[in-house]
Image (cartoon, rainbow, N blue to C red; front, side, top):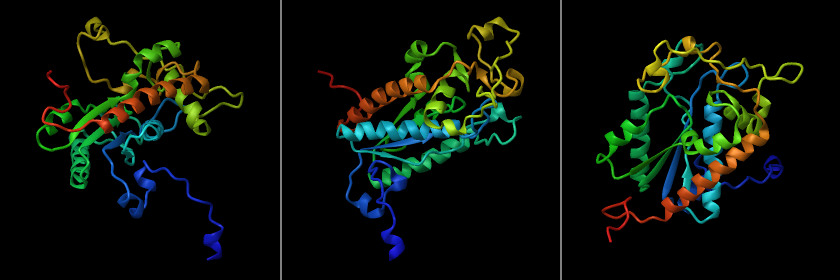
Length: 274
């Protein structure tokens, strides 16, 4: 009993399922579930393997908090820590789930939510190797749950052009700035304080049509990059990461509020024809 009395009061995050008790769940009604999706993979020499996992969790947490403050009934699910890593398979400990496997995992999660009565689900994706648009098409009509997809890095592409100096593909200025702002203790540094990262340069493909985006290929990252980094990280700062997070949370929080309040009718999610 004395040990229990010394325990600090538990922080209340009523939107985060992993922290809720059954008693708390029974008292709430949720309209929207947010499923963050990350990855476990190298991010140049300076960022942790869990970068995508941490980003998805932090973005989901802050966005659900903002939406809840506006009256939304949202629930943040635990982040799925593994993604599709077929392009990085030559790097050690890049933990791969094939697209078909990952799709089955998500479908099982969706069906569990459906049984609970949640019919609006947002897939919050933080890993560029994941492609969920085919899954949305496959599940359409197979479940009463309405699925929405947010690749957050695409949602804020316009803001990234304003905030950052260098285009970012993987572990560059943008991701490093987010890391410095929200999990800076995990960012690798040299004794002089500089990042342990290389320059994040990419090898060009020999075909100009591929370089111009006319033709698509899968990119083996052990050939494309030196240490898995694709983007110059050395201009990153915590301030830039905080600025970007503000844009993400504003846009995503507003969407979750709207989605939570929207009734599901025969033509949802489209507007009235009138």
